[in-house]
Amino acid sequence: MWARGKARIFNFLQRLARLRGLDLQPHRGPPRNLGDFLANRRVDLVLDVGASTGNYGWTIRAGGYRGRICSFEPLQAAFAKLEKLAAEDPGWTCHRLALGAESGEAEINVAGNSDSSSLLEMGERHARSDPASVYIGKERIELSTVDEVWERLVRDGEGVFLKLEVQGYELEALRGAERSLPRLTGVQTELSLVPLYEGAPSWTDVVAHLQERGFQPERLEPAFEDPATGQVLQVDAVFMREAG
Image (cartoon, rainbow, N blue to C red; front, side, top):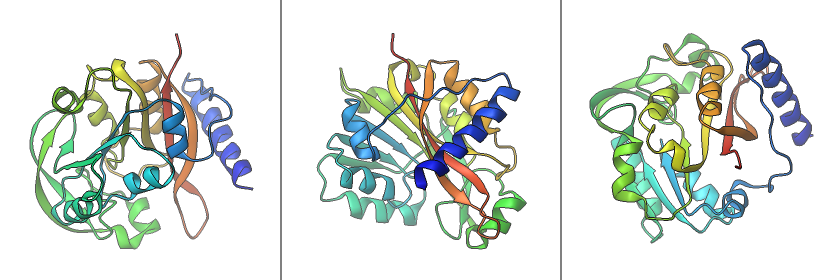
């Protein structure tokens, strides 16, 4: 049932992408969990951008990934929980930063559920589908870029995987990784099928940006559904660099 559901989502995305002149062609038969998937692809380092309280890092560890994790989370309360979770893992480091297109400072909107916090204003559809996610405050944060942190964190010869969970800021984070993208093994990012944040890129723009730089989709997982209708509003997508 779950596999059929993912197939339906991919077919839907593929049809929409073709209307925009894009061609989604996933590779076949990935391992059944992401930890195995990363290990199988010889990933040595995961850059976990938008780590929140550390659920992603914990999940890939539980799934068998044994490489390094560098997590980035700008919010004070979420970062404290992230640090506590990672404290006993010598291969997991934490950095209180947001990663975007350029360095500096910014004001982020803090969501009631923390995970939906964003530098962008929340759209009506998002708030209606998840009332617990509405904003409850603002916080000043530090911004950097993937390119800037790369030189001090990535070791020679490492296979690096970039995970983005940045709530509508996907293209900004990718624009801050232009020098790094050719050196990445893969990218995981959220694709919003309907507008969830004001001013956020469409999912087809994110796909096009990655495909133009040599990445193709390999995994799709539902990430956010409308509880009233069951409509999938957002998916997690894994893109891997094309061989050759």
